[in-house]
Length: 101
Image (cartoon, rainbow, N blue to C red; front, top):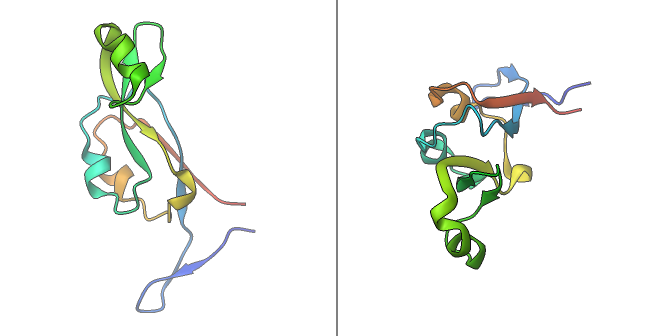
């Protein structure tokens, strides 16, 4: 049975948590990052081989010239509160959300 949450006014709602971000669909615009106050995701580089690498790491420096685009990646999915703000601002419909079991 899904967990029920309540608004300040007492209305019930069922949170839908961010479960995945499709790197093929993500355009790396950063809109979801900007509206998320929980630090659930951050921008990564996607290499020609399909590997995700985090900027500011030695690995990123090693493959920087192989980066084909930037995409959002979840770094702390357990921090998601299921508010859905990221889904509302995403122009590419690259996110999957679901009710927690």
